[in-house]
Length: 125
Image 1 (cartoon, rainbow, N blue to C red):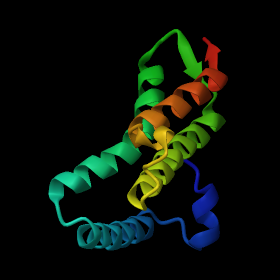
Image 2: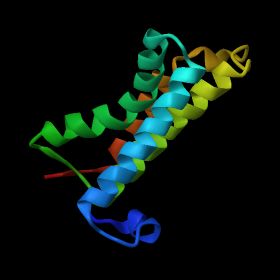
Image 3: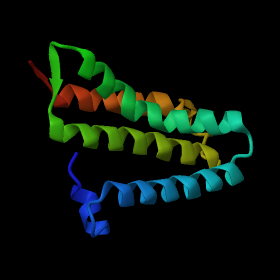
Image 4: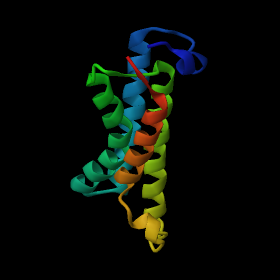
């Protein structure tokens, strides 16, 4: 993978420096998540609701020998579907769940977007 986005943030391309930065970011994120959601089950449920839509569809298509994803479109598909699931989760958390459409699980909304984007990004191989 190229360092396109990270190149602007980090002056060096050393793997160890990037690993250290990743561990610090992950540690801070984990502490904040533990403070916000004290239940370990809730942490796993919420993180899976955001992560799964961005990962499962590209993974399944990658294992299919008849279908190929356009490589430059994969990160977009992953980010958009996970971002939608995260936004959906935040809208539900802040009391907007009274709207009927927001009663749907965030994972399902993200998976639907991921599938639609995958249909646009799949080419027959």
